[in-house]
Length: 188
Image 1 (cartoon, rainbow, N blue to C red):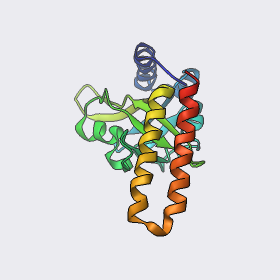
Image 2 (image 1 turned 120 degrees about the vertical axis):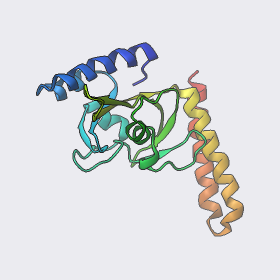
Image 3 (image 1 turned 45 degrees about the vertical axis):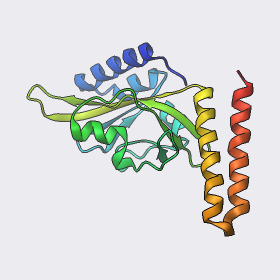
């Protein structure tokens, strides 16, 4: 679901209040929000997530097992692989500061992609100790996602020269990315 900046800020405030209250209704509060949103402990291990995260990530996050993020795979907007331990949530937790203004691309297990803007926010106690973190994943529009797909297509075409034995597969993948991008662009 696409979320504007004001709505993202409002939903984050609601979720942060629920986390700080420490009540048992955190899962319910997260599920009532329309964005993919999740929490981690101070080490970055996922502790709660909204049902919207499942649709967003294309997988069910594993509480107590997944670290840093609920997504399957991550990439920069330029199409470079982004390990989870270097994702915006990991940076926010390590540096104990909110990260804003970055974008990323999540790959789902079914091979589809979603462009998004994360809002990782560490939560500190009164003494300044990191106690948890929360992240809202706001999808960006089709036009931006189409651009990301075009970048992926170009990258596949560049790889053709490096891996001639995989030429057909890479060209087919590039054509698939271009086709998806064209379909998105035609919607506008």
